Length: 80
Image (cartoon, rainbow, N blue to C red; front, top):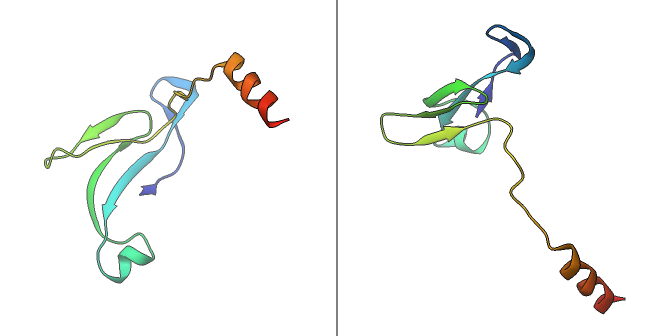
């Protein structure tokens, strides 16, 4: 994955985006480097689906982890 320079989002001086490219690399390039065939590109914060049906998203996403504070305290008490 390659990222470009940070830019202001259209019409919003407080929101920033970056262009990104997803690259398919083979051979020696797959081990090191960023050369290869671009298979998808867009700006951060937006998803894109390429002609092969591959969907890509790059950007901030909510942390979907949720914990049970009571159960966590019980587990900690057992360890103490």
